[in-house]
Image (cartoon, rainbow, N blue to C red; front, side, top):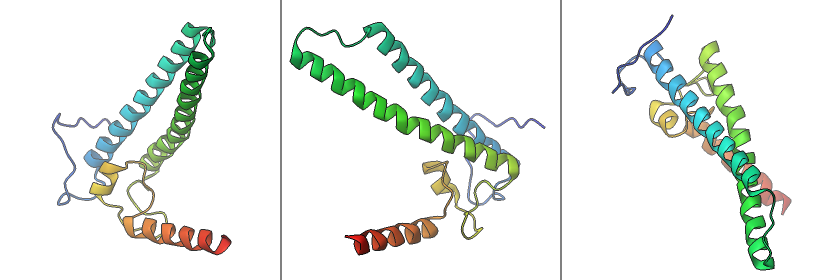
Length: 141
């Protein structure tokens, strides 16, 4: 079953939570985000191949170029991890669990999902998780 969204569709709190239109909205957002990341990765690869290595004659220029490449590679590594989370979110849409907190089973909420479509925890569960992490970190120090 294919769902066509109106071009101006935005999920609203008053409509049934995670109805087919809403799920399609988030699927399209996630797919667009994934495509954007993949394009960026392709551009980075192309740029690195074009530069043919870091052949700057000046040591300061070479150091600067190496720093830029290292930063770009860290960014791409973060994006690679993000791609995995996007794929997991799409799988949750497919299995019907998207939009619900992994811990409580409660709705995550439209505002939170619009801000972070890969969210797996409600704001309350996320805050509990972060407090627990801080407490454990403080105990180790």
